[in-house]
Amino acid sequence: MTARAPTADPQSGPAEIAARRRAMALFARARRDELAEPIAKRWPDHGARDLKPVESGLVMLRGRIGGDGAPFNLGEATVTRAVVELQTGERGFAHILGRDAETARLAAIADGLWQRPAMRGDVETIVLAPIAERLAAEAAKTRAETAATRVDFFTLVRGEDAE
Amino acid sequence: MSALAFADPTFESQAAFRRIMRAMSAPATVLSCGEALAPPPPLARAAAAALLTLADFETPLWIAPSFPAAVRDYLVFHTGAPRAAQLDKAAFALVDLAADGLDLARFAQGTAEYPDRSTTIVVQAASFEAGPRLLISGPGVKGEASLAVSPLPTDFVAQWAANRARFPLGVDLIVVADARLAALPRSAAIAEGAR
Image 1 (cartoon, rainbow over the protein chains, first blue to last red):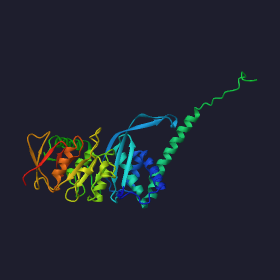
Image 2 (cartoon, each protein chain N blue to C red):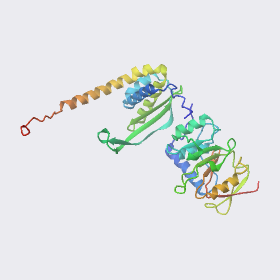
Image 3 (cartoon, rainbow over the protein chains, first blue to last red):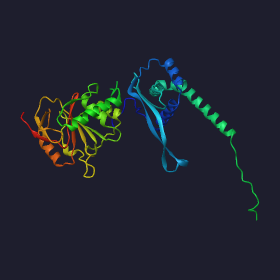
Image 4 (cartoon, one colour):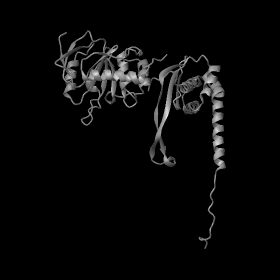
């Protein structure tokens, strides 16, 4: 493509892409209040409007047994997509699990704000950090609960192989 | 500010699809389409409606060079269609009759096994009132129908005869002017009428 969207970062190298991916993944897993409150407080004048109507649909989830087997269709997941344009021209995109249109829109607005270099630091500390913290805490809790039920099997030498 | 597409994609694209299908089944019938759209100029509303309805990520789209980047961005952003590198790889093409030439033979003609793999060309005209009158007959037309398209290349009727000679291969046209469209499927026969 020769013509790029006005929001596409001209210096979008691999590092930039990885950072955006991480940010969008976190926005997608945020609860609504985790996005709504900071955006309403810190960026009430974002002036976002929908570029495409917020839509819910299905995506096919594919899996591979053991991570490297033949791919198979695991099932479908409900996904909601939002695409917004901020007053300043950035385009924010979000895909979230479920059918919560408002959360999808907020996640897209957050993505748009994150793209503005002057805002990125604030978005990282005010919006992303709490989400990342909560997700890490939840993951740690799940790990701890799983670890408590863990059983390690040992096969002791039973003697029949002994010479 | 970027231009918006259908406000209600499901129903509006279905309505537009119905119009396009009706136009295809009755060549030379002029129908209104895409009145509610506001695409970036010079893209006609009916052209925008047709491409927003038909094009998607699986249909390479060729856009004539006369269209500005705003039109290309609009169509690519809202349809997700990949840009076709060459004319004969395009599933859909957008051509402005006033600014671009029209050479039907250069587009994809389909193959004997898959005649449907030809280019459907959205041809943007200025009006259906002025210009040479085409007499159209064939499937879907009772007797003979007439359609005026302006501007039209001088050799259009000869080009169309060659296109029809390739049947079942050949391209199909969707002719648009502002918020109206008519279709010329490859099965239609066109003769030059009185001016």
